[in-house]
Length: 189
Image (cartoon, rainbow, N blue to C red; front, side):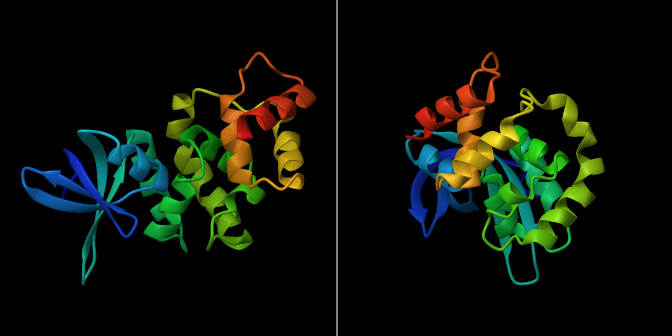
């Protein structure tokens, strides 16, 4: 099994990264953000999940070990395959995903194509206990009014993913909900 790859990103092949490792091109499925980042680098190192099936062997690459951890936990959930898991990972940071699962934020989780309300609920139920190990690794906690911030941004036409990405950038010392909404809008625009 391949667990880690370091090499030269050569090109984008239908939304996947081709990584040249000692003159062997590995096709690695990555998030759109990782693909964009990797193609701007001379050399990249990716944590890899190797998925072996009867008809194929696919590689899924991640910038951080936490992303790989979440991806593998998501694959344990009934109804979530590798493409859906990669879609979930691409929504936001692992800290934000952890908070969304623990707080059962279904609006955020269902913003991934192919993830409906039942699958999102199942994900929250099945992963809540499995992610207890991860709880100590989170850097940021969501503030009490952050669900209101997300709802306000979604009402203004932004996606839940955009809202959560903006929330991650807001300094922790800004605690008032209205101020957090203003800051989030500043980061999105």
